[in-house]
Image (cartoon, rainbow, N blue to C red; front, side, top):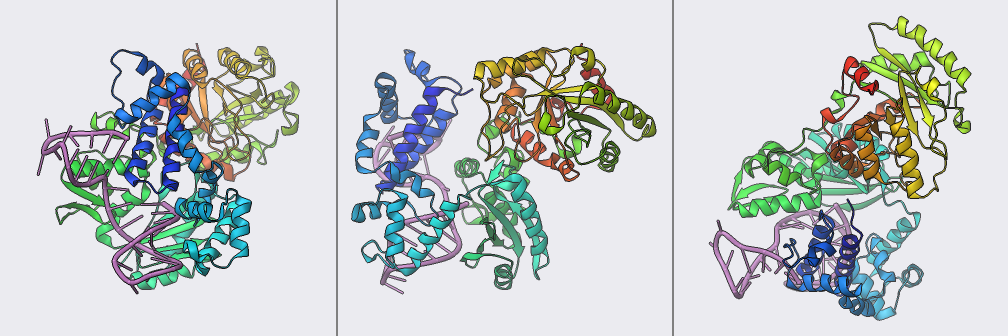
Length: 573
DNA sequence: GCCGTTTTCGGCCCGACTGTTTTCAGTCG
């Protein structure tokens, strides 16, 4: 649940923190503002309501001073301190911090000395001068900033998981071929399964740092960003940065934990370590100066009095509290998935024939597969007319016989939800199908109320089993259409209609947060690939990672059921 | 600016790399 005033105050505190950073204020003061922002954002009730009570409860990280500022905002809708800071730091500078190699200190010096305010100002300054002695920028720094600006303008700051993951895996294979490399692991946000990632972190276990780092610098790259004893950073040809970290065997577990993040999770962990009299860093867990042996990440968590927390859960979104209360979810794994319930064939816009799809599903050891081509309104996707649908049903009937004992085949359809909320096929047709998916492919611009209503009417249809890609977003390409996900999840739970986590890496829809919300509302989740090509079938992993991030357990999922349980669920009544 | 089961003052997570420095500041994760 999002609260607008919480969001607003959190963002004011963050802006104050940014401004203080420019002004080179005490780093801990800056952190205090950020901590407070984070904690307000994570509240489960409206902050206005909290402070409207006579004895408001304590909010973590909010002391006397910040409490005063919150009250000021509630009364006047503004915080004077922020306005004061914005007099000193022009707002246009804030975004420019994203330029690699250009931090708040340098930016502010540029502003003080040269009055730069915009990207254009900075470009003029650094491309027309080879050095700026009065702000301690000589040739090399200027060059770095120029390169940072180029990257910034190309806008390649984050990559979809589905792009980053295969590159990371390929690099791991290459690094394994280097002499003296003992172990290689992907760390960072790729390991945590985040939907987009800024760079790759790859951890390497070796005894010979020198020869390995030289070999890393010989991997294909566009530019070497950094090269030290324990770290080599390369810029790949697609502008993706990869950081290789070298560690020896003793430190491998703690380094893997450390470099997997998230930063917020690690801060919490180190805090727990300190309270227990330990020190935790990438080299190990220490008691005074004595190193405690930790062979695995699990050893580290256990030594801190915690159970093992999977990387996908490490976001400081309640996982540590859940762990302490013995309530950590046992999240769904790829191996739990028994079938794919959203697949297209060349009857509509897929590239595989019916039989190819079935054979590929058998190769993946699935118990069942659903054929769900588009319905008639999806012109661009070559949607099936009623006649063509029944032709397909006939062919599927024959294949059900042919593959009996090998795989269960479900005949279905991905039916469009039309502008008025009606479905593309009548109930008379839908009743002949084994499974029905409903989804929106048109009318994205409708209001939140209308789209929510359209989806709810589909949920209530007695033949609809799954709502596919509920928000319609395409990461980096198309914003989600507006829906009330809470309301949708509540209706889905009530009417035994599952909500999909679409595994296609530009969709991942439901996203992690929405999936968690849907689960909490009691809705069933179905992780599907929406396959159009053979390769798409392997994207299931991205959906599973997203589900894990949403705390989805095996028992929350539709397609972890065996075939007879699944059939039972699909009957709806 | 926050916080306290060793503290109401003195900590706050921690370290690597680079560049311009010869002891450190800035950036990054």
